[in-house]
Length: 406
Ligand code: FAD
Image (tube, rainbow, N blue to C red):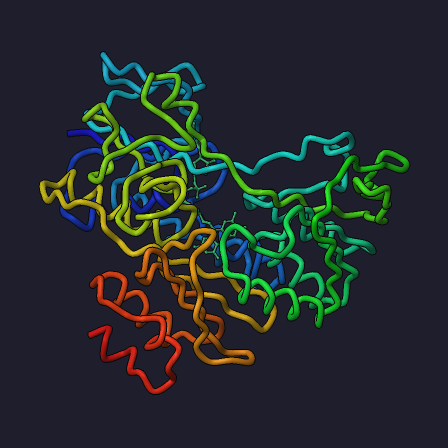
């Protein structure tokens, strides 16, 4: 049985590695369109951006790993799928036969739909190439504007502010990370960033990026303001790379639709990672139903492992607890579970180390821990086991979370 994987990122690479770990001995081809060995993205906005690790430190495995594990790495772009003939067609005109095809195409950044968004000096951050361009630009930047107060924009802002650079963050919502975290956590991060010198403009829109001598020079805001900017980072979210699936007439809706076994409607085609939308009990009661698309390393790795299990004869429904982290200045944020807008919150701890427990329909759904790793680890177990925790217990510092988690 031959396996072809499209996308040599976190999920695609992990699928190949987990197949070999599970004893799969048949051919594996990993098709990737980035001119590099598979690497981790999280450090791109953290240690790599700050110059604390080099490109080799980003690699998921050393260069020798792929050859030693007989994983063929093909530098190409998958452009079409012939489902009847079970062939993946590549953009170099060749094609690859498969028995099982895995779509691990990830996501790409949303672009800013305003004049000037394509000027030199306007950046995004998704790939190693993007991070290299940013590292070079930061070295000479005087005024930095970040568009979007999401995780990546804030991590970038923290690194720049840590170097003493002037940073303004423009955000359409009324607080940072508004879609992802509670009011309590958002407030704490706003205050921490402001203490580092970051200036926020909330409820703000952008109408243009103005240029001078062919380079970004200022950001024009909807209220008539003009913020000097020789470096603009656009971090306004991502969209899934689902076009390959769509062209092959596989169902897509903000992601490639898969079932709990990570298969599409075609039993020979699966999807994992950022590009996939799947059902999970952890999304129960959320406004968009119980199907989600998750952008995290945990999800990419766990789905890849789960899929490798099925492809080697050990099918198990995907049921991993979602978790995520973000490092910003002196704060390490760790989130277990999935929260939605309108979830009730209870805070445990305080100051620079606290956790926000979020409840929906009377049940614990997510825990945001700031500099409280032990709460995060307990929360992951409590959510996995489906244990009952009341808001009063969560808020009570004497209540033994660790005991509930065992
Ligand atoms: P990707 O890693 O994006 O890999 C997809 C690959 O497929 C890419 O190389 C893409 O070029 C390639 N591809 C796409 N289409 C094709 C095609 N047709 N043919 C061939 N190749 C194709 N997550 C966390 O949990 N914690 C963090 O702190 C964190 N920080 C992050 C910081 C940054 C700057 C970024 C960008 C992401 C961060 N993430 C973080 C998210 C995490 O990195 C992603 O969720 C994870 O990489 C998803 O893995 P993936 O394999 O699904 O997608």
